[in-house]
Length: 232
Image 1 (tube, rainbow, N blue to C red):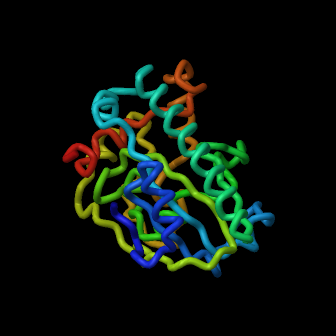
Image 2 (cartoon, rainbow, N blue to C red; image 1 turned 60 degrees about the horizontal axis):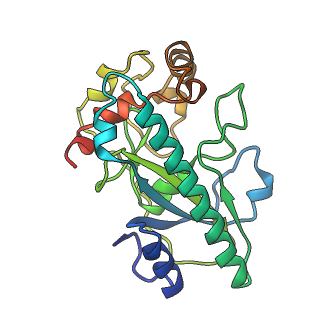
Image 3 (tube, one colour; image 1 turned 45 degrees about the vertical axis):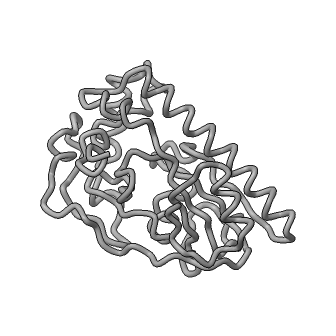
């Protein structure tokens, strides 16, 4: 099991192991501004995990999403939400508060974003870094993952945040993006999403071409061609 800190309480380590989660950690979110989510601002920590996608399905979408990918995407999100709810219950049973961050829920349609980026918790927990396609990349699974996040006020040992990217000069995802939405800018903590991704161009392309898959919310081409995923 790949854990970002080996000093986690036994119950949490066992919980993750029983649910088949092999890549996870805890993020220290103190000092992190959580926009339009004041109800979460009292939670100083977040448990973050990577849920791996089926690699054969991910390899199959290099020219565009398909039904298998759409079904896998939905399956992963449902599994993440189920695990998150169970983890919240575990934490509350231990006298602390917790709140799950739903998978793939857009709460701000105008700016095309949710309450809080799962990727922020993941990088702060040391689970991975942000690639040039604005997706989280892990050493173990590449970007072929969906992310889960549970906020908590339970004090837990935190991972070491990843504060650099490991994409180097690779431009594979940029070259593959059919929307031309990727700028090529390398990620670093604090960089604005818009410096890496034209989210409106991305969203427009998906809705124009892939409405039959989750109402145009899915593409996945940039992730499918990533060398970190293809090495699996």
